Picture 1: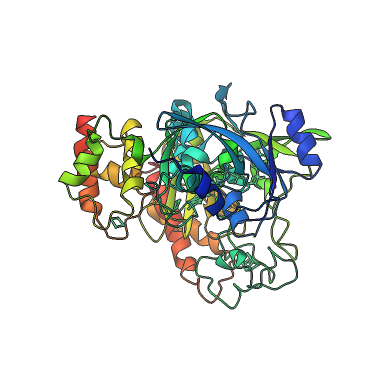
Picture 2: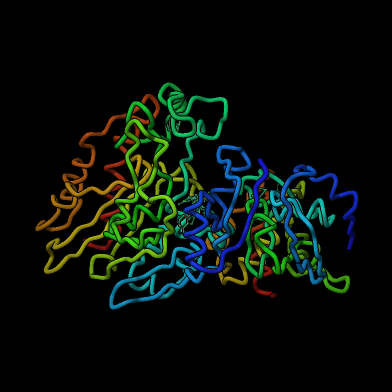
Length: 325
Length: 173
Ligand SMILES: Cc1cc2nc3c(=O)[nH]c(=O)nc-3n(C[C@H](O)[C@H](O)[C@H](O)COP(=O)(O)OP(=O)(O)OC[C@H]3O[C@@H](n4cnc5c(N)ncnc54)[C@H](O)[C@@H]3O)c2cc1C
Ligand code: SF4
Ligand code: FES
Ligand code: FES
């Protein structure tokens, strides 16, 4: 690890000022310290934001509002989260380990970095770590990589679980920066790699995530997060699906679907959602809709299995929502 | 408690004369310490190298194995992925602090009784994680225990004994 200074800030203004002058924010540190130790990240000045009053979890009208510094474990265990949006809790509990969830913040979770092994190997080609150096995953180990949203420059998946659920539920985020505050869809935080995979998100210099807002409503209450992985817990997703249905009089009125483990960002599946509206929920209907998920999918040498696993995961996730039980 | 600041301070892997330092006060197993630390030192390195508390183990140093689990302000965390400089004023409990007046903690006894270990390397982390797991109310059934203890890897595969020990201790604490 290279040397760095660290200071604690006690106001949002001070955090913005520090971030605007090029200092790096640190929350739980579970992404940043890990990467600094490998020297993939080399900030020289850290700003500890944990003393900021941003860890509240509250209900505002029917929306769920989660402070950026709320810890994954606390969000998952919160009664309002479990009541209004059980799939938010489920996707948090399915991620990382109890110890890490006690440390990791929601803001940091959204900005966590890829788990591509070459990203962490300083001597491997990786456009994300060193622009224009190439992409070792294209001709290397890529079983865990993406089939949607990839480019010749990068094929890494976004690893967050809860981000998938937040994208499915049209969650928004509020950020503040030197030029004031902005609110936008969580989905809009993530960039596609294109030919600039080192640029991962749309935050402007000096911007701080303040909170995430999940709209209330009937769809979320029945949602489920299904994560398929190499072992039963404590592993990143091969494929995951955040699925929710609003069924009235035996007919699907609303559907939400986003998937993880397959896209270079959390991937909303609007075509699948539309195909379900007005249908009577059953396995055949889910299977027909899930086929649309593969539109534009480009498998790599090692991840062709995802073409099969993705639709199956989607079908199972919709079955789990209770829409047909 | 073994406190060996002099020798240990020089042996830290990150020690270098020009590196930034931070003053950090920690209460570890009820004993207060005031330390001048290299900002790069993890809580794990401070426990092991500055305070001589080598019960807490360094396995992966990447947050993945759980061997370094401690209680930080009462919650279980992996001490390898947090900087000591971020925890001025914190309370830390490690495996060394569980035994009280020569009596093992119920979890320690349960690990012995149920053969919850083979080589023992993961055991301090398992036990500290189990303290957290039981306090959180996540030790109600063997399935619950398996899921909520999955942040602690045991390379010897002593899992059946670990689950039995945690289940047994959960009834006693
Ligand atoms: C072994 C292991 C397994 C894991 N498994 C999973 C998993 O299965 N699923 C999953 O989803 N995640 C998993 N994770 C990732 C983990 O969830 C993230 O590391 C964590 O959520 C990051 O949050 P943090 O608060 O620790 O972020 P930090 O490391 O503190 O920060 C991460 C980044 O976010 C920036 N940042 C933090 N807060 C803000 C803010 N408020 N505003 C602006 N910028 C900010 C920082 O500058 C930094 O760039 C795993 C991690 C480990 C180590
Ligand atoms: S997939 Fe992306 S992160 Fe992985 S080596 Fe290629 S450029 Fe780097
Ligand atoms: S040493 Fe900390 S989790 Fe492995
Ligand atoms: S007892 Fe050897 S690693 Fe668990």
